[in-house]
Length: 113
Length: 114
Image (cartoon, rainbow over the protein chains, first blue to last red):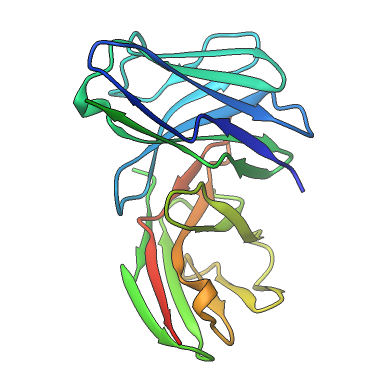
């Protein structure tokens, strides 16, 4: 089956620093990847759609200057949380589309102190 | 607004029982309906999916029932096991646009008692 690898699985950082999360499709090429945010006991909230070789499309209310997305290759998309603050603490999940199916990474728990 | 409404919010089932989770949607143009299973601290994993031209799909102990006229679909887990305890999300795919994003339900916390 298709595998999406996400790193790191957990990160703790100080307020004001930047954190980069990587999402890789290991055995397939993904022209489109998605980034979600999930709060405890809640559903997945789509943050942005990452398109290889072009700018990401952000959902309403998501600050594109705070959540920088780069999709430089067909197998890698990165999400950088810039100048992180405690309210950015959350579970971030990426996904990649293969045909009509969407496969998810294992998620990154970000804790901003 | 394109929504997918999921119920119940939580469900407790005895081992060996049947777990049933329901979803309803509004946009009749949705063209693909997957179910995902998520364990704590992990990303969702695709369980089973169905297209609207099919009324039922079965894979092992998991069955999707789809009622197009009622705009409802449900997940049935037969012979539920403690290892099935997880959060389940239904979803529906937007039919247009290059991204073809998924709209997720609110999730159901399933607990299967031993």
